Length: 337
Ligand code: DP6
Image (cartoon, rainbow, N blue to C red):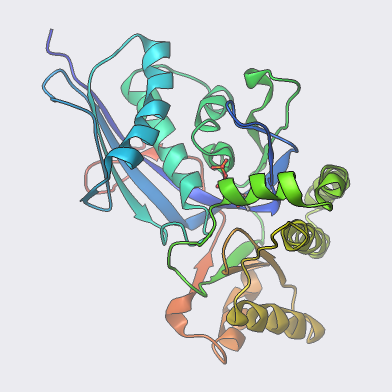
């Protein structure tokens, strides 16, 4: 009778090459557009869930710190989606460790909700496919849908208010010469969350109406470039897409932006390196950090040049990451499960 359900999962974060910026349904987290990303090996979240009748109440710890009631409530509202589905209404303990600077625009909510979804799916034996699971994780954070897959993943816009129509899937395993270098400009909490930022943009930026059409065109071209493994075309499209997203924010009223002086230093450096013949392209999310897409075979050379302006500990190198997997309490993968 005293049955407990538990599981530990690791999920990697992802960086969008075609950005998600805006919801058409705020309840269901249905996006205005589709988006596409690269999952990263170096940045991830480990999450342990335990559903047990022996627990007094729901708890949530992040990086060994018990989270506030408000933070816990947000997560529990998410867990309730799975409770409803499984019929298992036991109290839960959630322990997460983020191997990502939290809320630094490194999409930590992506790996966090992907790890939580995958752990609950396993613990409660729901056996959802990753595509189906992404329609749940989406309701925690949109970008987490893509972290349920390795390599290059696409999150489909879907149609109307149909939750099941907006899911993610892997489109390429990215097991070729591709990598990403992250320039950590500032690892502090970001000033305006993406959730708030995108809503404010929809409501007040006259440029926003251009965004869905631009994304559609960029996506078509990106899918072509991926098929051809043309990293230069991919980089050009990603860079332009990111800057168009930031332009919608600059035109919001009041205007806001995530640029810091060092962000521009990194961007200029990427342009210079490109002039010198290196294949590198930048993208940026809801934070000042710069992410550089490049062939993995050039990444050490690119890092060396960036060390003229940045400290080594600000430069994180990554290969493409894999889909979430279960781990033991020491963080070792449990391949057999
Ligand atoms: C700029 O997924 O963090 O990183 O769905 O409200 O949780 P919510 O937003 P979130 O937004 C990510 C925005 C972005 C672009 C992207 O990852 O596609």
